[in-house]
Image (cartoon, rainbow, N blue to C red):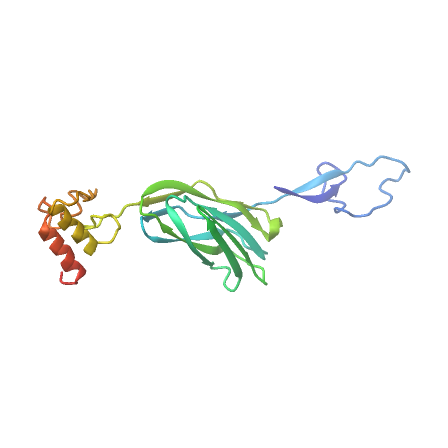
Length: 238
């Protein structure tokens, strides 16, 4: 963007009169027309960004909201838009630049968290304004997130938020995790025994690697020994 710098007396000249300045006798001849030329100064927008997310399902993740130039910032408002089907809001904490600031988050809407922050002293340098914590869903997927809208000093400092940032979650393979909750435990052993007894077929195939997650001993067959190994692992025996 641009800000108005003042008026020049020629198209290529420097600023001769500031905005709002009162002047008299611009010309030596009374009633003469004196052309003035508006001068504009280019303004570089501050960049507010997040990095791409690549995480496992069912996991806590942190997303720092970064700024490339925080000089003069006394307050900020940012909205992080993330895929609601892949994560849930948990919390927001202060960033590396904003220790001691008042920061108020609103994560009440799925897929969006609005954060407002302010302090008594202006920031300087670069770093994180705040850190958003999310918990990824049990289902893997691929989507994007963005920062929009964003404001610094109630719009007094031009800024721009990042968009189209990759957000990917993947299923984590665990031997024995037959129910897909990313934790190998007694419930998995129970599911295996139910399958052996013919009560259920809900043994989840995991890939990679193959064969089935329930085939803990790797003999190609899901059986009672696999359930035993899982229970031994939970008990700390193996």
